Image (cartoon, rainbow, N blue to C red; front, side, top):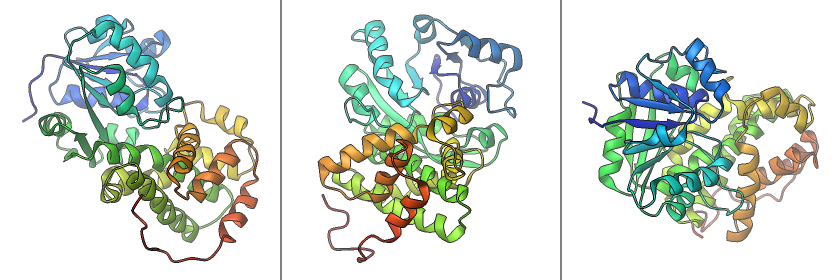
Length: 341
């Protein structure tokens, strides 16, 4: 039984935002779906599906809105499904509207704020100190969720009651949620896996096989876990749905824009050409820059992240990057102190 709630606002009518709004509506929750782009709302009103998710038929009960103050009015829970670099300005807009009101802010966006170097929950907590924060993350390709493909995610909050609320809110016959209390670890898993997916896509574009992708994923997971541990998260979280699970689907799915972006780079497209071909936000690119800065701050070695940053900046050829990674100094797979800061 899903919890009763007056109304939920979903901010961001892209592929995942629209799909998530549909999930909530089909679970019986009254939903308002907002986007700042009137054209996106007009498309949804006409086609009931956003760009990139032709399988979706948006539930008829979802109310569409372009005025932010109207969208969040009377909504005890506000879900953010917008590009990660738009979270800080959105938080500022919400702060001006909410004042000292307490709401549950739920992050589905996956990334790290470039300007502050913070995970997105900390941006929210700093700007909206009267609100609580939750995160829903995991291997959830929007097109598969829209098709009713069995999917599992993590519902995280530092507040146990909020984690349970989110778990029960999103769970259905085809979507199973697990509670998680390591909010930081869940966030980092969802953000950092996009970097490794770009690398996996580059390997696909270069014509490499399963050996290469398996190695990139495994060593990428080691990078993710090292940084998470250094920042105070549990490395175990990175081996769960929000880490390994999301990493796997993003590295393998043909619908993953981060993997596809990398594949285009591997096939010889320059970064601008690859971005234009995707036509949507590729979160792994700014996240790689932010993660590299964090790794340097914490003294963590992240060689895959480093080459992804350089390739995306057109400073390094993908084949040269492979050679640089393969010719690094030989070492233990699990050196002492691997997961300590």
